[in-house]
Length: 314
Ligand code: AMP
Ligand code: MG
Image 1 (cartoon, rainbow, N blue to C red):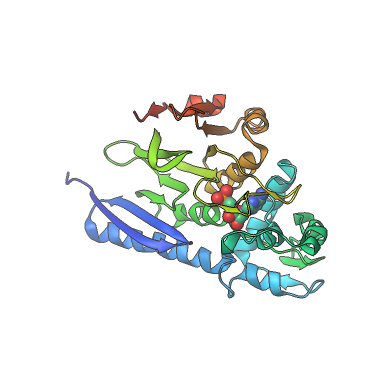
Image 2: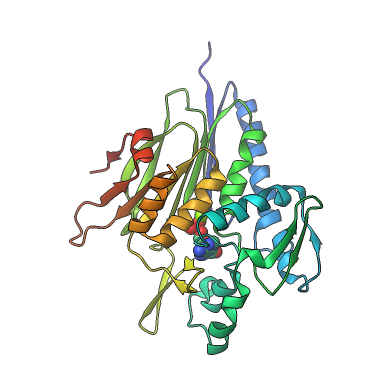
C-alpha cells in the first residue's frame, strides 16, 4: 500500500498564526480536507468573533437592551454549553466579560478603568443577564452586557472540525489551543507546551492522539501601566486582571470544553483550580515557573497523569 501523504499550511486566522496538518491517502484528498478544515474555521470566526462587526455576537452586543435577536443554529446549540460552564465554574468563566475587557483596555494595550466604569461594570457582567429561549433560539440582553468570544471561540471552531474532515488524521494548532483527530501513520502527534516564563521555549512534550489541549496564561499578553500589571484574563467576580506567573493546560475530548475550562482554571489559580479539576475528573496541568529560573514545576490532576506520559524538554 502507498504511504499516506501529509500536507501542511500556515495561515493567519482568529487573530493568531494557525497551522494545519492533514494526512490522507493521496495529495488531492489531503488538500481537499485541508481546505474544508480551513473553511470551517473561517466560517466560525465570521459567526463568533467579537473582533468583527458583522458577527452574530457583535450584532447581539449592538442590539438595544430588551430587543430579542434570533441566533444562528450553531450559536443556538452553543449557548447552553456556555451557560453550563458559567454556572459550574461559579462564574470564573464568563463570556459576558466584554465590559471589563473594554474597561481595562485589553484590546488596546491596557489602561486603568475610570471611576464610572468601576462602578457600572459589575452590573453589566454575568451570563444570566442574557435571557435565552432555547426552543425559539432567541437571545435578549436584559442589560448592556457585552459578549466576548475570547475564551471559547477557538474551542467552538475546533469542535466543528471532525465533521469537516471525517475519517482523516489531522492536527490544527490555533496558537494556545491544539486539536487532533486520530494519530498520524507514525503514531500520536507531538505537542509542546511552552514554559510559562518563556513562551518561545518548550517545557513539556505530550503525545496527542485526539481531542484538544487548550492553554491559558498571561505571559504573552500582559502590560505594565502606571506600575500595575494588566493582562487579558480577568476575574469576572472581582473585575480585575488575573496576573499570575503560571499557565494551565486542559485536555478534553471536546475542544470547546477544553477552551472554556482552561480559562476558568486559570482564573481560579493553581490551588483552587487543581482542586476543582480533580473533583470534576478533568485532565489539567498547571506549569509554574520556579522562583530561581530552574525547571518548571508541574502540577497535574490524576486524570491528566493517567492520560499523558509527560516528557520534560531539557
Ligand atoms: P483564553 O486565552 O482561552 O484563556 O481566553 C482569554 C480571552 O477570553 C481573553 O483575551 C478575553 O477576550 C476573554 N476573557 C478574559 N477573561 C475571561 C473570563 N474570566 N471568562 C471568559 N472570557 C474571558
Ligand atoms: Mg479558553
